[in-house]
Amino acid sequence: GKARDWSKSEKNRKMRMEGEGKIPGWIGALCYMVLGFMKEILFTIVPQKNVTLTNDRIGLTRSAMFLFIFIIIHAVGNL
Image (tube, rainbow, N blue to C red; front, side):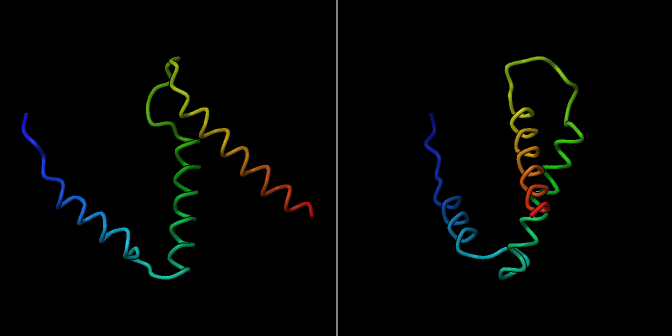
């Protein structure tokens, strides 16, 4: 088979990991964290495909994480 040249990919990844996103600093980190949470919540509520019974546990894990975060947020609210 053909050997692949990953030098360009590795260089791009190195640049990506050293830099920041489009919003720099801690405010950008906060924005990306909130966007990540909102994306996970949206994917939890609105599934990507039809429900089929398989051994795939991604949806179960996602729901468990959402429930865990939900409980923590509401427990902190009771302090």
